[in-house]
Length: 191
Image (cartoon, rainbow, N blue to C red; front, side, top):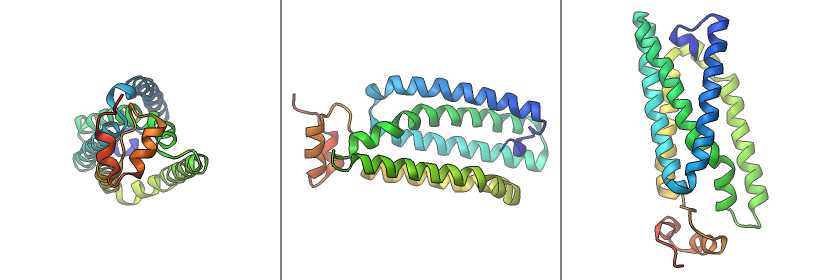
C-alpha cells in the first residue's frame, strides 16, 4: 500500500507501520470507551461510511502520485491511511467481539461467534495475500473495490443491524422476534 504513495525504503516503511500501530491501538481504546454512549448501529454504519471516504481519499492521493509523482499527493495518501486506521479501529475493532455476542441468542452464540471470527480471518488472509498482488497488477484501482465494499456494508447495516445498546438479553429476544427488528430496536426500552 505504501508503495503507491512513495514510501519505499524499509526504514520508512517500519516507521510508518509503527505510527499506524500506535494510532490503531489508541483508536481501539477510545472506541471501546465510547461504544456505550454512541450505540452499536450508528457506529457500524458511520464507521463504514468514514472508511469508504478515507479509502476514496487514499485512492485520489495514490492516483495523483502515480501520474505526477507530486510529494503532496503521496503525503495526503499516507495521512488518509492513518485516518482510515483511526476510523476503522475506533468503530469496528471494539464491535468485532461485542456485537455478535449481543445479537445472537444463547443457543447460537458460540457457533455464531466462531463463524464471525472464521469469516474475519478469511478476509484477513485475502487482504494479506491478494491485496498486494492486486496493487502490483492494477495499482490504485484496487482501492475502488474497498470503497464499494464499505458502502455496501453501510447500506446493509442500515437495513439489518439491530441496536443492542440499553437492551437486556430478554428485550433483545423480543426485538429479534418482532416483525421489524431494526425498528423495534430503535424504540426506547420501557424501564
